[in-house]
Structures are given as C-alpha cells and as structure tokens.
Image 1 (cartoon, rainbow, N blue to C red):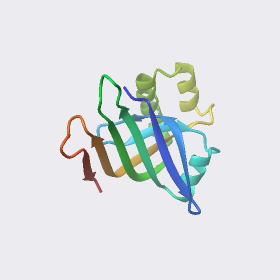
Image 2: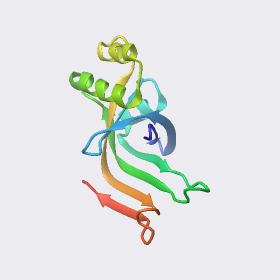
Image 3: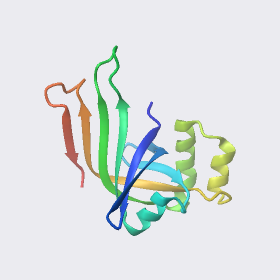
Length: 140
C-alpha cells in the first residue's frame, strides 16, 4: 500500500511540491492532514488548483515495470463536521496514533483535513497496459 503522495501547488506563477501522507475514497477524492501555516496550505487558499502524483511501483531488477498516477483538480480544507469520519479512515490506513487523531478532531491540534477532487486522472502502467501505458480519464 502506498501512503505518500506528492502535492503540487502554485502561487504567483511559482510552483511548489511537497510529500504528504494521504488516503482516498471510492470516488477518487484524496484527503490529507496539514497545518494552515504550511506553504502548500496557504497557496491552496489563494489558488485551489493542484496536482498530485503517486508512485505505485518503481521498476526493479525482479519486477521491471512502472506504475504511477497523476491527477489534477481542486483542493480545499475539508468541512469540520465530517472530520471524525475522515479521522477514522486516515487512522485506519496509516496507523496514525489515535491520540493525535483525537486531538485533531477535538480542535486541540492545528492540523486540518484537506480534500482534493480530481478532474483529470492519468495512469502510467507499462505492466498492465504494455501497448498503451498512458491511460487518461476526464472526470469533470
């Protein structure tokens, strides 16, 4: 299971990228925790357009194939009223300390959840699609 993604934001024509722990839902939305003072969090408030990439598999001598996912869409802080549901899913996937998650839900911790809604998804997979490794879907 892949737990880390790269999030790209842009402000004043200057791109920025960072690594974040994440989880996703069945609708391909992606969620993460961050604090509002982080550069990517600040930039999302002024420009919610973002891109995400997730390395699923890197080629090795034993498994010579590459799988990666790239997404573009909109990101925003998530509504507080549903933070408890997100917190349980986040904790289940990532094994995050339960006390930490409770402190986020109760507002005692500065972290907030963010939600990324994809508009375009590109899968690069030369294992399952050797003849056409780049697969693209427009969702919105």
